[in-house]
Image 1: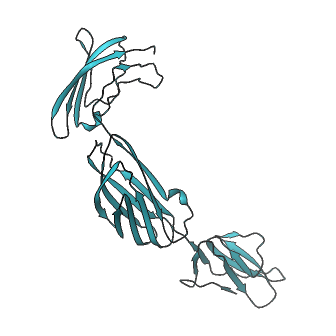
Image 2 (image 1 turned 45 degrees about the vertical axis):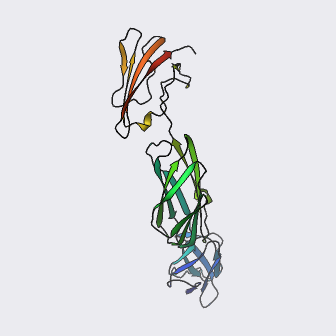
Image 3 (image 1 turned 90 degrees about the vertical axis):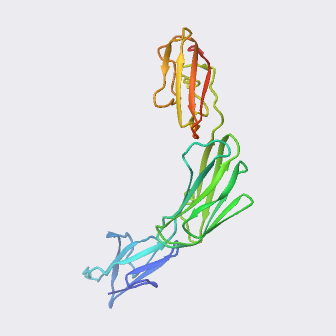
Length: 294
């Protein structure tokens, strides 16, 4: 018995583009029926001399004569449907930054498929709230910037290969910057859900300490949250009651978690000591009203 194949890279392997039907054929002298197998399992109702499939796997066949005498199984033929599952991940540098501070975006494109992809293109439209400073590094292809648009061309991305692009930028204003990058290629992609990646980067403003906290468990103002404290490499928060007794002191830096636990309602006073990234020190003082029934 002989199994005929489509054009193959080797005698026992058939590679075709995704979705292209593959016809396998078996022939032997005499009047026979056939039984086809995929990955070692019987394929129901497939007893003709040919089998057309769009499912990848290892195929074998045996011939059965009129006396129910079966031949040995044929050699296995591996059918591979080629595809390229492109995945893009864009993430901003985890470091806290303020307005006009430089940070990095890392964009990674991976070919998670089983075949090489060509003419892979990544498009990243930077929002107006960002200032583009330049390409820091690039492992594959070439990247260009024009009028707010970054275009990264990768002529060839082989299967299971990753490519990485690093971009330097600055955030202009306080707030969250939302940025979306997209990737496409020539080869069929069975999963388009991972062809886009969204990153949100918070640009932190000046120190702001609220005057009221209401630790009643409703999820609103339950703790003293100091905006902008992340920008300082060191900080210490001390809180005093109206008689000047210290009722709280942060250790190892304040983590926005003081709720006034164990204290009565009323007005408290704080001293916040800060050390900037450049080593400059400053102190911020003020008062906080603690209310539990609001």
